[in-house]
Length: 114
Length: 116
Image (cartoon, rainbow over all chains, first blue to last red; front, side):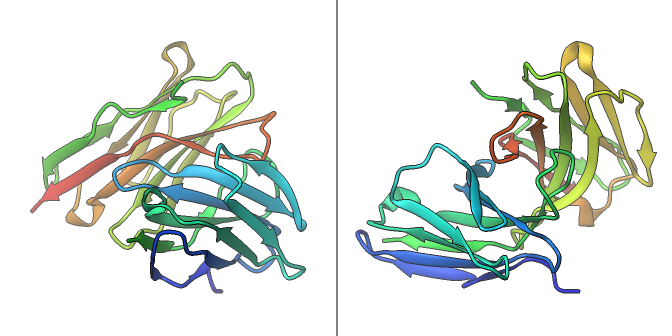
């Protein structure tokens, strides 16, 4: 079975541009979360979606938005890119929203803003 | 305030040595879960172990073991007889029950290098 897949794997954008990152969860998983991992730090929570509804949002500006599709895949959008948005963006797939369920992560999208 | 603290930034051990990674957490909830994840250079976070707040029994799973102590809010992780393939960044994470979004709170990670 396929794990969590993210695309693209690497991306270079210019300040002020917009970017869309994509994630396909594990088959049967209905929850998708997005995390930002700046170099040398732990992942920081951005969003969680479950059954196409936003269930949680981290402390990120409104330039960050996301959505989940009927097939449970998800997109993360970032507008007006800043140099500080350069990071590894990780998608996490979970079967449900119960607190004990482990998350399965994709390999991430490495975003570089120049 | 940092909910999960991993004081060890980098650790180097010689192959076959045992190594313990420290994790201290902070929560006011009575129901919570603690996790350890491994992040190899490829970037993917790999689930290792999980423990709930009601079970302080320490266990061993293969070369991995963990020591959960609520009295000191610590959840330490030990690798026995380390191997070169264990070289990675290890993250401790906390998930709280009444949690909007069921987010994980990650520590800053401990980079482990196992020297052959």
